[in-house]
Image (cartoon, rainbow, N blue to C red):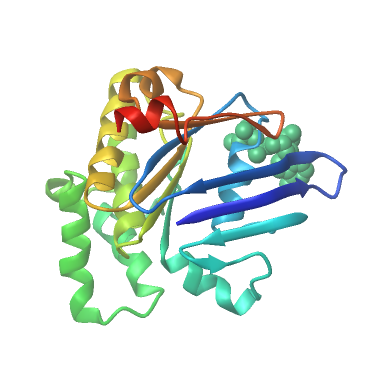
Length: 228
Ligand SMILES: Nc1ncnc2c1ncn2[C@@H]1O[C@H](COP(=O)(O)OP(=O)(O)O)[C@@H](O)[C@H]1O
Ligand SMILES: [Mg+2]
């Protein structure tokens, strides 16, 4: 599903966010990407949904080499990838239902498919009963659920979450991680960047740890594999 080969990302200001990172993530895996602020987690995710290109090295996503993807091919790539952020990024004047439906509208989904697919996505995240609520009427956890519904409404094979629990209390964080885990069990590959090591320790999923732009731990084999 994902392969990075010797990826280095150097920013124009000379800062190197990732140095010679190589890793593979198989279809169907659930992986935590951990490390302190500035470690390079967001940069790694941004390379996967093509918000950035690597300086050197190669990036493969869903079986495609996206190292030098032309700009016109980016929208098609993004339709196969759901992305969730710390700050939800909901449209404030649209209801939960409209926020999710909007993702389908902008990609030209046939109008008669939009409502059933939107409600199905809200059902998955447990918010079918709040479809007509505006973001400000929802708790932080509920807003994150709406953003997850929006991210999965295209039925992506890959779901990326960048600090999805960064604005949430511990109990709500745990619920969101469990929701992502359930989505993974339905067959979606999930990569979660977080510095919330509590949930990471409890869930016993594969952990890739970055520090200063280097992979310092990857339980791709050994302990993790023997427990999987
Ligand atoms: N657009 C950018 N321009 C310059 N430096 C950046 C940019 N984005 C990230 N960086 C730097 O790259 C490093 C990694 O950042 P980031 O990937 O956001 O780490 P994390 O998500 O683990 O906190 C940091 O030193 C950060 O300052
Ligand atoms: Mg980050």
